[in-house]
Image 1 (cartoon, rainbow, N blue to C red):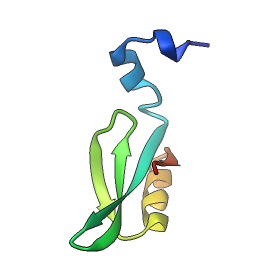
Image 2: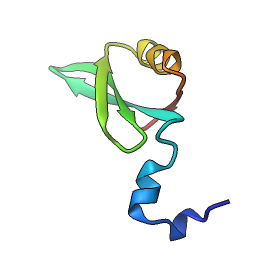
Image 3: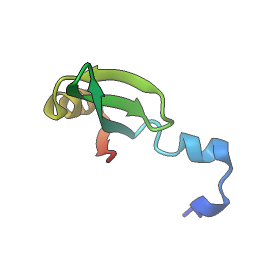
Image 4: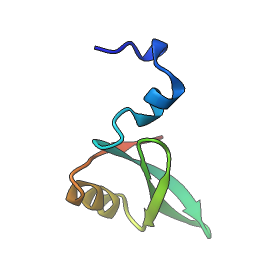
Length: 68
């Protein structure tokens, strides 16, 4: 197993890139939405609910992970 403390920034950014996507709550125009980001932090899209965000992630064969 790789020790993440010794990984390069590039390797760390690529970790899980084709396995997980992050869901982060965001406020847009005074309403709570849920932003989806790839594992390297790239923003993909925003959904009106957490359930829809997770469903879209799973439909793309990725595992959703929440960011608080």
